[in-house]
Image (cartoon, rainbow, N blue to C red; front, side):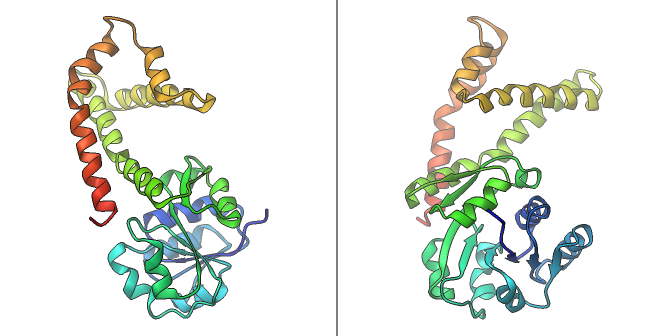
Length: 252
């Protein structure tokens, strides 16, 4: 499927990652003037990326309209827009339900999504609700698509995405510890990154995280020691935190 002309209302970090990932496949990418510096940088690097004079110009020229503003900016950014009935609107705004977009934009088709910054490198899978062919084509190009059928499933998986910076800070702490033992920081970073990427690459073959972990542990070994003394006592606290994040995602 040929990718459509994609327009972005809002040009923050996630939008910029999507533009970088789509620039090799979309015939045109239209950017709103929101986030002028980021938009100008993207247009300077990609010949098929244009910065429009207004959000209205983005709406008029786009076949697929991506909403990439902060949750507290949705009403201000969208209420003035005149969007044609049936327009395909993709939201990358966390925690904002379908109904908000239809209330503001009228009779449009809304697909919610949770792309991560790794889409810049065509890596990772993007969560969408509901499945839609053009949207799937966009996110498949960016690394892959996971489509769910219910808002409950979408909210639960959106909640899991909130663990990503914690995972990264965990690895950064391990790197810092190695540097404190006298290892040059660049070497510590290179080794821990390589170990993490190599281990996670096993998931590409369809192996689950639990199966990968079992394959790396031996009874009484070093991996088991770290898991049982540091992680296992904290599992319930992690689940409780995820419950709290889920309530926030649901607006409860």
